[in-house]
Image (cartoon, rainbow, N blue to C red; front, side, top):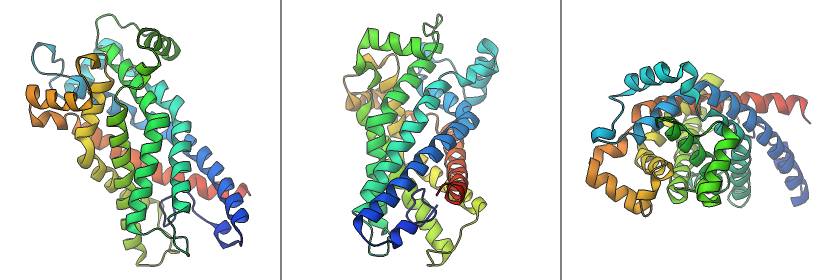
Length: 314
């Protein structure tokens, strides 16, 4: 990863003269970023998905008679007992199918915004880095993450019922569209925009601030992969504590019982009224473990693939 926080480890095209050369080189590196992002996303989600599953189950759990789990361990035990070990991977296919377009939108949007924000040396200041990360998060929320997350949550929520109705990914999508229309795949879009926007803004800002500190002001100094991973875990933790309340609201808005909420604001109000402020931090521990591992793995693997691509993909 370079000083900009984008996937471009080297930027030979920045040294060329002329807008056309820069645009051409940027497009080539952008394609590498899309491919590397898709591969990285697939590997990462296969490793960390069980923690995402448990987090979502706990966030969907409400007080009273409807409450199913007493905590993380209880959720894992009951899931494995009723559905086997692979029950913890229910909804995985949705995230795998969505990993490539999500990466394409995220890094494509970041690179496009960055072109209008960098200084003469190709560097982003802290404020610009924050805004570019925010823009990338908003773009991926609208074009990729919202439908992917909505379907994932509905799949996990479906498994909570006595008689699950979704037989597989495509069958589930058909059923959702048949009963709710295409809008059924866009539940909680405003909450998702807030979540993804804040996620990327926080992560890009924290990650690049730590890397600048490690380099001692020298943007060309290399950062070891393990250090990158440690910084990524810290950035992931910062984003969790910063936006878990938004994530809880998003999950409720995308569940099968989302119809009882008028909108995102009403969902937040009902959670506060019926369950108290602590409910906004449900699933924090499993989300923290997943996100820290997620961001650390993503930065490390992504950086490695970009190094490899830059050697053999000219």
